[in-house]
Length: 372
Image (cartoon, rainbow, N blue to C red; front, side):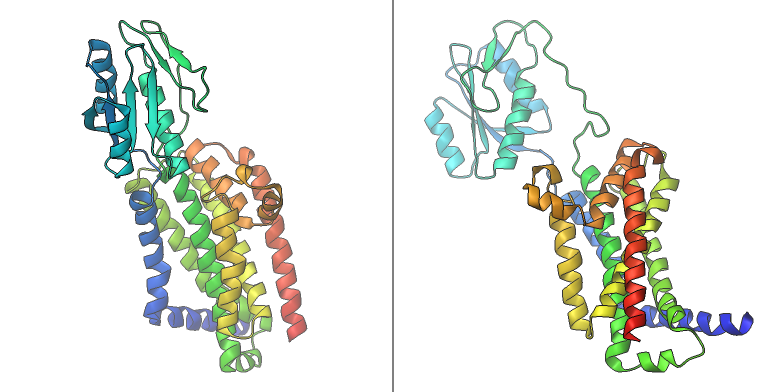
C-alpha cells in the first residue's frame, strides 16, 4: 500500500505546488471571491435608498406635513424639492433631478409620478412610497393610487390602523441576503469546473499527459490527484465567502452551518465532475475555456435564479433551468442560510445535486476511459 500511496501523494503535491506558483491563478482563485462579495454587497445592489423625491402641494397643512415627515425620516426617500404644480415636478424628473414626485391634492388624493425608465426600480419606489403614505395619521384621509394605476385606489383611513405587513427572514430587504448564496453557487462552479478542466487539458496540450499515464499510478488516480487541490481550494473559497458574508455583509448563517458545508461539498464534487467531463471533450485550453463559459458562466448567471426569478421566465427557459445545477444549490443555500431551516427542507435539492454528481462523474470517467 505504501508504494502505491507515495506516487499518488507525489502527484497531489506536484499539482498543488504548480497552482501555488502561478500567481495569476492564485489571484483569480482568491481575489475574485473577495471582489465579487464586495461588489454585490455594496455596489451592485437593489436596495432602495435615498430616492430623490419632489413634493407637489399648493399648501403645507398639518396632514401633508405629517406625510412628508414620514417620507423624509425613512432611509428610502430624500426630499429634494417642493413645487406647486405637477408640471414642475415632471420637468425635474425629465432632467434627472428627481426620481419620484408625490402630488397632494386639495381633495385628499395622492398621485405618484415616477420615473419609469427602469420598471423594476419604479415598481419598488411606488410600493415603498405607498406603504409609508398609507400609515395612519390624525385628521384627514388621503386616497392612494393602486399599484396598477387603476381608478379604485387604496384608501388609508386616517385614525384607524392599516393592514400590517411583516417581512420574514429579511425584514430590512437587503439585497446581500439574496446575492451571497448566488455568488457561492457561481464561484464554486467556476473554481472547480473551469480550473480543473483547464488544468487537465493543459497537460494534454503540452503532451505531458502521456508521460503521466505511463507512471506507476493508475490513470484514474492521476485525474483524482489533479482534482484534489482544487477541491481543497474550493473549500477555502467557501470558508472565505462565509466569513465575509457573516462579518462584512451581516448575512445571517442561522444555525445550519454544518449542513451548509455538507451541501456545499456535494456541490463542489458535482462541479469537479463537470470539469472532468469538459476536459475529456476539449483538446485545447481555449476550447475548454469556451466550453466552460458557455456551459457554466452564462447558464449560472441567467438561468439559475441568481439575478432573475425562475418563476418569471418563459416556460421553455424554466425547463432549461431545471438542468442547471447552481439553481438547486442556490435555492438550498437561501433556505439554509437565510431561513435557517433544517436539512429536511432542502432534501429535494440535495437529492437532485447528488444524482447529477453521480451521473456526471460516471459519464466523465467513461469518456475518459474511451479516449484512453
